[in-house]
Length: 128
Image (cartoon, rainbow, N blue to C red; front, side):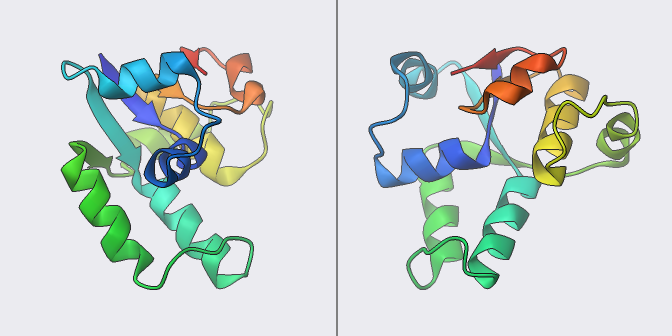
C-alpha cells in the first residue's frame, strides 16, 4: 500500500508520541507498505519554526532527513498534477498545506494517515 503521512503524523512518529493510533503504527511498521512524506509537510515545518509556532531541535532538517531515511520514508515532491487537482478541491478545509497533501493523496491514489478529521470529508482514504 502507498501511504502518505500527514505532517503531524511525521512529527509524532519521530518524537515517539503516544497519540498515534494502533492502526497507524501497524501501517507504519508493515514492511510492504511504501511510506511517503510530502514536501508540503517539510515546507510547513520550516514555516512554523520560523514564525515560532513549532519548536524543534537545532539542525532539525538534518534530524528529519536522517530519520526519514532510516525509516524508509520517501519524499513526495509537489508536481503540476497535484497543483492542477488542488484547484478542483472543495473547501472543506482551508489550510493550504493540508489541501496540497489531500491533492497528492488523491492524484497518487495513496492512503493518508492523519489525525485531522476534516480530511475525511474528501474522496480519499484517511486512516487514523
